[in-house]
Structures are given as C-alpha cells and as structure tokens.
Image (cartoon, rainbow, N blue to C red; front, side, top):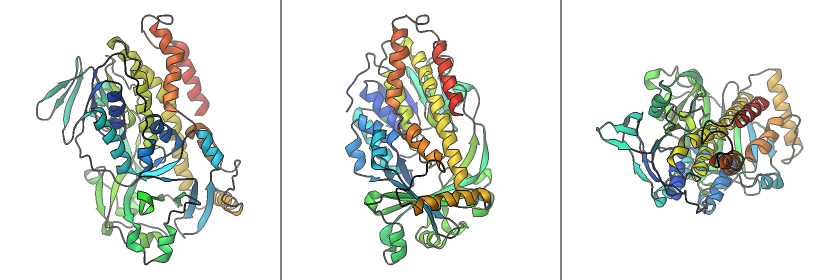
Length: 466
C-alpha cells in the first residue's frame, strides 16, 4: 500500500459519502490530512452491481486493496448480447487474455454495496470521521465552512463537494442550483439470489457464472436495454434495466422521481423476453433512478480556490454504466495524488485547478463513449439495427474469440483508450511536467495561473476525441 505522506497536513470537509467521497477520504487520511465526511443519507443504501474495469482496478491495486476487493468479485472477460424482445443470443465478444494483461489490471464484477464497503472501511481505518444522516444547509468559502441543519458550523482548509448532481456545494462554487431535464428513461435495479430458482434449470443455467468463460450480459431492445451479471461469489444476480419510463410505469412526475425510490414489481409493466419475465417473478421491488440530461460545469473550483466539485457534482455520469464507478475512483486518485505534493496552503487553489484540467477531457470522453454505447443498445428496428445484429452474429459465428475491429470499433477504442488509462500516473505526469516547475518558480509567477501551454494542450486533446 502506498505510504507517502503530504509535507503539509490540512483539515478537509467532504460533503457526500458516495464512492468518490469515501475513496477521497481514504487516500487523504493516508496522506496525513484530517478528513470529515458529511452525508444526509444512510451508509447502507446501495443496490445492484458495479463494474470494476482495469482503469478502476489498477487504482485499488496501487493502494494495496487488490486482495481485499477480490474477496467480493468475479472476473469478466466477455460480453454476451441477448435480444430483449426474443431472448435470442445475438452475439458474443471476448477479450483476449493478453489484451487485458496489457491494460495493467483485471476486469472484475462486484456488488455496489460491497465495493462501497471496502472503500468505506479503508477510510475509517485510515482515520476519516463520518457523519451520516446529517444535512448540510449552506457552504461558504471565506473562510471555508459548512453549516448543518442543527445550526452547527464546521471549518476547514478546503471543502470538497462530492454530493451528487443536486450538490449544495455547487451553489457556493457556481452560484446556481442544478440544471437538468428528464432523459425519458429510468434505471430499475435489483439483486436476486440464484438459490431461489434452482428448480428452474434453464433460468439457473442462463444466469450461471462460468469460470471458463466469465461474462456479463447485455439485453438489446427497441428504445430500452438492460444488463445482468453475477456477483457475490457467483450466487447473486445483479439486474439493471434501462427502460422507457412512460411504458414502464406511466409518466414519472417530479413529485415521485426521487433517486433511490423502491418500486414494487406489481407497479411496473416491464417488457422483455420470457427468461427475464421469469426472473422478475423472484423480485419484489426494484430501485428506480431517473435518467437526466445534465451539463458539464465550466467551473469546478470557486474563486477562493478552497471549494472543489468532484464526480456528479461537477459533471454528468450515466447511472449504472460500466464506467460510472471508475469515474469516481479516478477523480479520487487524481486529486489525492496532487494533494500529496502539498507544502503550503497557498498551493491549494492551483492544485485544485490542475485537478480540473487533468480530469475534464477524460470525463467528457468517457461520457460520450458510454452514451454512444447506450444508443447502440437501443437501436429501433431498421437498417441500423440489422447491421448491428449482423455484426454481432458474425462475432458469435467466429467463436467467442471472434473480434471484428472494423465493425465494432468502439470496443477496441475502449480497450486502448479507456482501460489503459492510469489516473495516478496522469496526475504524476502533470506534476513532473508542470508542478515541479511551478514550485521552483521557473514557469509562471509564484504559483500563478496554470501555464498557457498546458491549457492549450488539454484543449487540443479534447478536440481530438470529440
């Protein structure tokens, strides 16, 4: 486990105890900072499964958590594609072992609560203080402080907003509240023990984990799609259904659209193939998360340089997507790697600005890739869907190792550009290229604005991937 300690220790308040918040707290405490995490919710609210692709797993490995996380995971090497309408297996794509090896870490599947628990327990062991079911009512920058609903005020050297798209910290940073419009779909999430349907041999086999071909599964349909995979040591199935909200349960009005609402199965009209319908009979309720169109914020750091937005407080993340957890872990990795260099509090604004610069292109790139993948899963009947299904059948016909780079180029790009990314190295590279120079006052005025060559380079990188 990394044992580096920041030259200077500071007081940090993190608002929000999601995956990003607890991971950031863990690493900051390891660096010698004193961290208080405040969250209005409960520590046991997470449902469904989570993906741990190599770009996430390598951060955990670097921090010495690889063995701990493997207690709760199963490996993934392939994607199986199934028609949500007919149940027909339309394609199969498996990554070569040496391709995964080149990314630097394994691809794993885990329960969302299990992943959060590992990071939370690590944060507590490192010394982080947590206050759950505690509401922050205001955040101020001069000096950095938060006010709670009970009137208490806590001061810090910096405040991090990791409190989601309706962030209270965002109001202090940008002066505005959230801006969102319904996307038209909701994600319905549940887990179910495979022991419940052992008597249904077809369904039991359909959901089984096979060590010789570890896989996760995607349902493709007309305007909706889904995913399911095995977690909990192979005995629990996580189900994520991305469904048109009007078809599923009627129009979801604002007064009942709170994230995390548990919806009884009887209230839902879920379309899908016969095996999905049989599977749903063993589920009493699903957690609903409404999907929204949200914008990327221009400012992640306030004018004082002591308030920072991270994760969904700063940019949109598609819920329960393959990279949703990675974005949060990567944010924590980049920020804490930068703050490990802290020698004076005057450096804080510039290190936070560097975090924004390093992360902006990455998060926009991943969001665009994942949104394109969702559109690909939801293609309505017609020429485009026929071409997609033909490509999938060709892969399956070529065997599990069938790889057609020309027909599914985005899959290869994900391997090369997404899985190969190392957030810690990205932060270290920035420090070697710019941080040391600025620290020695050889570039820019003493810790002044970010050097223009860096900003221009990052803008050029964004343009090249958009």
